[in-house]
Structures are given as C-alpha cells and as structure tokens.
Amino acid sequence: MFDLRLQAEVLKVVDVSCGGENGYNQAIEFSLEILSNVKSVQEKRLIGKFLEEVSQDNGKLVYGLDDTMKVLEMSAFQTLIIWEDLNINRYVLKNIKTDEIIIKHLNKEQQGDQSNFQNSTAKSDLEVEDEKSLLEWFADEYQQFGCLLEIFTDNSEEGSDSCRGFGGIGGILRYQLDTRSLDEPEIYEDSE
Image 1 (cartoon, rainbow, N blue to C red):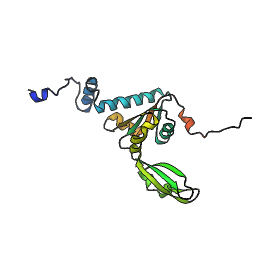
Image 2 (cartoon, rainbow, N blue to C red; image 1 turned 135 degrees about the vertical axis):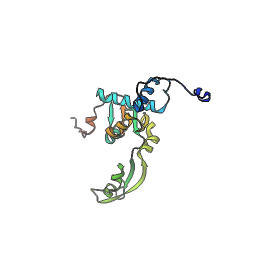
Image 3 (cartoon, helix red, strand yellow; image 1 turned 180 degrees about the vertical axis):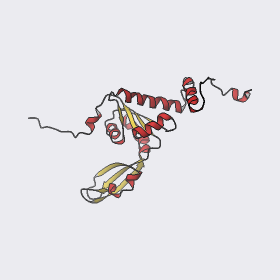
Image 4 (cartoon, rainbow, N blue to C red; image 1 turned 120 degrees about the vertical axis):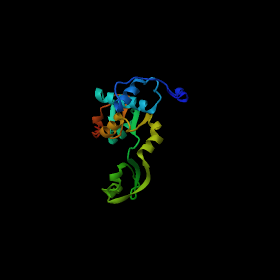
C-alpha cells in the first residue's frame, strides 16, 4: 500500500499508544537512536540536561541575563544556552564628556526609555558607539570565552518552558560556582 518511492525514506516504524502530540512525542522517544542528528532531538537533550542541573541544584547552572554575563566574563561556562528569539540588544555607549565606555543590554521596552542613554551622575548624553543583537554578539564572540554555544527554539514543550521560566538565556558551568557571591561587592583589606 505504501508508495515504493517513499519506502527508501522510511528509517523506522514504531507503534505508539496514543495519537496527537503525545503520540508524536512517544514516537520521537522510541526513535531516538535513529533521530540522534535531528535538531529537535538534540534540543530536547540539551534542555533535558539543563533541567537536570536545575533539579540537582549543585551550583553548576546559571540563568538570567545579569548572572549569565557575569559568569561569561569569568569564562566559567561549559555550554551557553540562548533562545533563538532573545529580544535583547547590546549597546556600547560612550560618555561624551569623559570618554568612558559603558556596555548595556536592553530589551525593546528599555530601548524606548531615553534615560538608559544618559549618564545619571553627570547628566550628559551617552553616544551609541555600537548596537547589535545580543544573540548575534554571542554568535560572534562565544569562542573567546571557551564555551560551546547552543541556540534553542520554543517549538518544543521543553524549549517553551525554558524561554518563560529562565528568561531565554543561561548555561551549564564547568565547575561549581556560588552565584550568590556574584551580587556582593568585593571588599579588599590592607594587610600589614
């Protein structure tokens, strides 16, 4: 009954116990070894590993823009995980009076607020030296930080949950790191 021209394209036949999306997910699980190179299966494994780190709570996971950027500067990421539709731009701003360079990461709402483009202490405007999508910047620069870059979609249930729950940005660390210490200012004491 099956067209012979399509017969060569069939990799595996599996029996599933239900239809619809649940049956589709079950068919993918039964076919993982054959589909190992398919992007949706790779994405499912990646998000699964990320969520496994969340459940273990062993200090080898970071998510959210601020913590991710701090850890990136430390080159502590093994794998950096970014949502493909991350709607944040990276701005390199220059203080006109002092020539100080300031880097800001702004979402669409923050980009409309002109106070983000002004120096609050000197009451001067900041000149935009460079503006780039943060995702594009990561794609260009991730190798300098010695990590892998994985971009995921929100097409799967896992990907959609990660976009909403973790802000669409985060990663798995090489080693355990106490991220609470990232928020505390460093205090140096003079030794006598």
